[in-house]
Amino acid sequence: MTRIVIIGGGPAGYEAALVAAQHGGDVTVVDADGIGGACVLYDCVPSKTFIASTGIRTDLRRASALGIEFDPKGVGISVPQVHERVKSLAQAQSSDIRARLQREGVTILNGVGKLVDSARGLATHTVQADLFSGEQHRLDAEVVLIATGSAPRVLPAAKPDGKRILTWRHLYDLEELPEHLIVVGSGVTGVEFVNAYTEMGVKVSLVTSRDRVLPSEDADAAVVLEESFTERGVTFIKHARADAVETTADGVVAKIHDGRTVEGSHALMTVGSVPNTGTLGLDSVGIETNDGGYIQVDRVSRTTVPGVYAAGDCTGLLPLASVAAMQGRIAMYHALGEGVNPIKLKTVASAIFTRPEIATVGVPQSAIDEGHVPARTVMLPLNTNPRAKMMGLRRGFVKIFCRPATGVVIGGVIVAPDASELILPIAMAVQNHLSVNDLASTFSVYPSLSGSINEAARQLMRHDDLD
Ligand SMILES: Cc1cc2nc3c(=O)[nH]c(=O)nc-3n(C[C@H](O)[C@H](O)[C@H](O)COP(=O)(O)OP(=O)(O)OC[C@H]3O[C@@H](n4cnc5c(N)ncnc54)[C@H](O)[C@@H]3O)c2cc1C
Ligand SMILES: NC(=O)c1ccc[n+]([C@@H]2O[C@H](COP(=O)([O-])OP(=O)(O)OC[C@H]3O[C@@H](n4cnc5c(N)ncnc54)[C@H](O)[C@@H]3O)[C@@H](O)[C@H]2O)c1
Image (cartoon, rainbow, N blue to C red; front, side, top):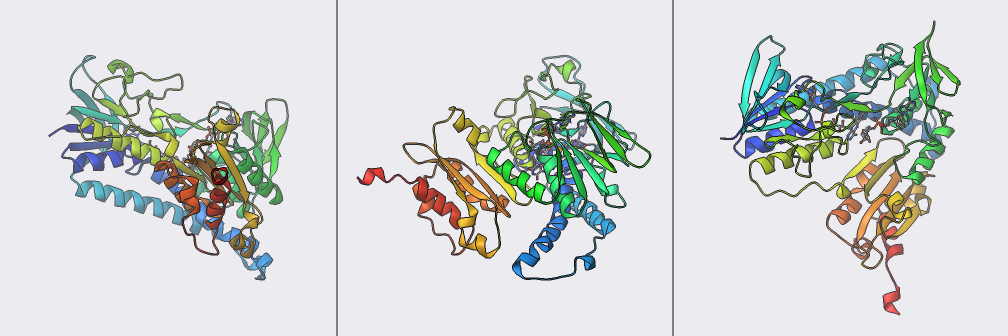
């Protein structure tokens, strides 16, 4: 039986453990935070649960345009109840995953793991697990998977105190909603919380180091979101790199590099994450990291040391739960000699849970515009869609990108209320090399937002071959 030790019990670690146990491995997971990892306990699951509550407020905000009148004064928010729901749902999901691992025969140790090989180049490895119970275990393994994730990046002059200066992991401990929230950083995490708190009626100022929100995402989608935020009264402080955030008598002040200041009641720092790799004993074994401390891996999750794999946010490949899980599974299939396809990032679908949502898959528009990928493209506004009109939607679009000659779909973007659900047909087309003709000839329900996917695909069908 292959002895496998996994350090970290997030999506990368627990999905790997399931695969390894099902393929006959003798599996031990050493985890510090709780099974499910930061994903389930602090980051992805809590934020999406919180956003589920704020989404109810979105519907109320839009109700009067559809003829439903209510007294806004009668709509209250029970902050303790919202936060309690977030925490108990996260704990319940963690318990479910833990029970599933135990049913599959995986040993779980609560503590901190690190590599302690006695020399470099050994055929097997040793993991030391310092358990919270005070015990210490030394575990010999033919295969080690490092899946330790990442933690919020902290600016030296903006140290979170959990009360006024916050990371996203402190939010659900607040007793009341902030009066005026300054969000520092306009990546995906930043905009998701800007959206959520404005929907809760909180005044929000967004400090962004660039000239736009979501600098790494589709530019047209970012414009739609910015318009929607502007309508909801968000103040943008652009070209603004925050050097420091300090507490004042009754709130906080963010100090921008060029001398500007922004005052509010609370600051939420969403300035990225750093990998949890500093205390793993990587140097002693010879595992290479890059400048940011991320573990270097190939497309089957191998590190530079035979027998040691790494997966998830600690590798910095693409920090998504779905990618972490896939990297973890791939590592185990490879280690156990099963057939395996190397990871392919071109087929990853992801979504930003704002209102409207932004979902993307495949090649980005920027790669096409910059001439790196030849493609034909279409962008179809949603306001031409009958269902969108019925729902009173004013914003949003469907974009599809295809190969110039064959029409094979290579990417797409959807901006719509449920874009995270609508993206699947485009993701299936990208994954399975389907063409715009395939998409266009698939029946969609009438009326439906997905009808716009058919219509966009129809616009990309080539008619010149009929001439
Ligand atoms: C606010 C926010 C929202 C997000 N929303 C989404 C989303 O909607 N969809 C999506 O796909 N992704 C989302 N992500 C990204 C997603 O959360 C991460 O990609 C995912 O958590 C990575 O999983 P992982 O297994 O690599 O690490 P993690 O989930 O971070 O788990 C790592 C585990 O390793 C443990 N650990 C660390 N060091 C040690 C050690 N030395 N010994 C033992 N255990 C250790 C930790 O305690 C933790 O339990 C979001 C991220 C953030 C910040
Ligand atoms: N819905 C989802 O799937 C979801 C949600 C949240 C995060 N994530 C994942 O996590 C990744 C990281 O996202 P993120 O938003 O946490 O981090 P990020 O690194 O993508 O964004 C941080 C932003 O903060 C800015 N910044 C850094 N220092 C600053 C300063 N001093 N002042 C002002 N701005 C500053 C950066 O320029 C950057 O735009 C995403 O790419 C995504 O893969 C996914």
